[in-house]
Length: 369
Image (tube, rainbow, N blue to C red; front, side, top):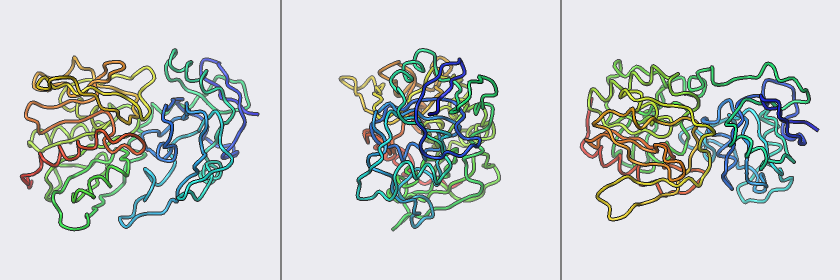
């Protein structure tokens, strides 16, 4: 028997699975995900860095985990990165048996291999209600009762931990249509896949890459998703500002939205419990439409853009239908925009997948800088 101890002293009991080793894992910010499927992708999503992930769906692990093999470009073929980024996993019931034609491992053995502790048999409904009422809080998976010395991932530059360390260039199969410079702030691999299958050459660069020193040719800038407080990424923000000053088409996803907002003089704030799941409804804010259009989106973020802080030539593009928070911003020129949700999904619905094509339409006239 083990327990999840929250910073306010609340405890939730359960059984241990995954890694049983005593290490620095099992401590972090406790958050919940409402998705019914997609646990392998979620656990390898760099945006979950430093967090203990609670799955609200009661049965997790029943279809196992796919291979960790790499594709022809050298990154994960099936997962969202090459490692598990969460510091712990909490579920109602971890399935001991799995069945799927691509599965090569159980969830238990996969977590064990990567040194990630898990808890099963937890009342995740009660735990989720606690987090919704109080907000996300620090916690640790332990057998002790001490409420001191909680690990706080929010004081670290998590983006620097998950970003690539050097420049990588990925060539699409067939003729290259466009080239983008992609700031890797913890980029999900399906974003790279989404560009490559559209014939886009991806130049993946570290979060603090100096744009002013690069003399290569590219048509636009992309800013990826990633973990933590966007205000920790001052170097990325500075380079986004430079791209905007040079009138380079720019597209951001998730953290990329927050960083873009900060680069234009806007502000961001921490949400009470964030948006994490594959069922978030978003409203397209478009006055020319005869009626409102809603899309269902995949999301994973704990911060949001302050709508009132946007400059006058910027507008809200999407809003969240549940709480009316900003889900997308766009410049009046149409050349710079970003969305808080994930058009590449994985896991989740593909309603917003067309936004990659929207960005490519902006790039149809090559801008060689």
